[in-house]
Image (cartoon, rainbow, N blue to C red; front, top):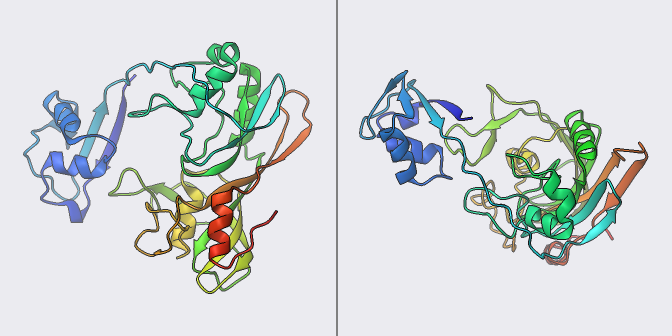
Length: 310
């Protein structure tokens, strides 16, 4: 089944060629691919097909009818997974910072999904569907380390997915920010939605945003940085990164949301999924897990005069 994205051309994009406007709006796709969509009639402007060289005007409605994605070939791979806990229903891992969670455009190997298939081929193959995300009930960005829970059978998957959807999960992160807040604790409640110009980014938006709540407290501070304990009440894409950047506390090493305001060098974004609390999908027992603070996170914290927790 195809998917349709609809965009309203903002004032600052008025006068751009259609293919240029699409390239800026969907940076994850090549311009040649977007041009083919226009040539094949899959892009309309104000309800009518158009040409790639036509200019867009402010207020134009541009719709892209994406073709169905190609079926991914999922391979089993022998990738080391730091396991915190496992039983017949769940697998809890400490995800390394450089591990992509699931295959997608341009990344079809070396992911957590490939590792899961290599670790327990029968269980995860049974759950493989069109989404190509067997057992995945939540995700972390590639550069975010920390605790993740994975389902090992369809019943566990459905119950864990429901727990995340119904906000029955405790999610606590550690973040190193450029700059320190004046207060020792705080909360952000700004709605989050797709960035109006950069399709790979999320943003605090006034219209069409989804409710998002992030609370934080300072664990350590120095002249140029702070170590925050951050708790999510909602689970929007890039929520912590967007909210902290909006509060003028960009995460160190986050070059998507904080590069212009942060000159502190780091090997990656300093965000770690530290603790996770959730009820077992079969027994209902409350489970609590903690992922050790990684060495690279600790090194950056101490270089900035911060003391990470044990």
